[in-house]
Image (cartoon, rainbow, N blue to C red; front, side):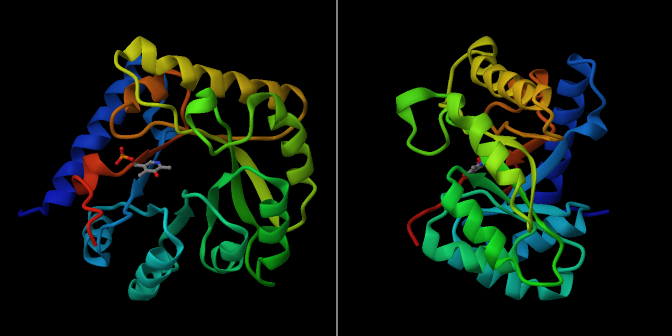
Length: 234
Ligand SMILES: *Cc1c(COP(=O)(O)O)cnc(C)c1O
């Protein structure tokens, strides 16, 4: 049987996840794979779909909406996740087109997403993005403000708060990579101890899948290792 490069890369990523889960004595089936297709064409998403992948992540609203439209025939089977920075003027399009948003870091954005979620659609799944790397990164709520913001978000009617997301600064060794992922998991533990019912730790990218899974990731967001290096020149 011939297989596409995307299908082969997906297999390799699934094997990395399985090995990391085994090393962590965790069930591999409890680590969901989000394929990050930003900058790649609809045909690559279709190739991944044909290889069994169902959840896809996008960062840029316009690009994503065009791709979702091109893949309308697969809409009921694909889960679309918005993972990029989100401005107020784009919340409506995101609320109308996506199943998940991982990058909520302000109450105002969450309120708009809830208000703009169309009638008849399931509540929008959201993760709170937490800044676990300090000043280096501008996105994400500060760790000490995560609990207060989470409590406000769970009160919004058309959102379902699922958990936390982080984009740690790149780090060298496995042990160094584990530090910010552990931080995010500890914040999640604090929120759960407060009574919030959260099931999603969205962390781990192509370079640090293993560190994230060792620290408890339940969803890894993988682009490069599946689709190849991104070209931003267009
Ligand atoms: C692009 C992106 C990814 C994927 O990163 P890779 O290193 O290509 O795997 C994951 N998460 C977010 C938020 C991204 O923007």
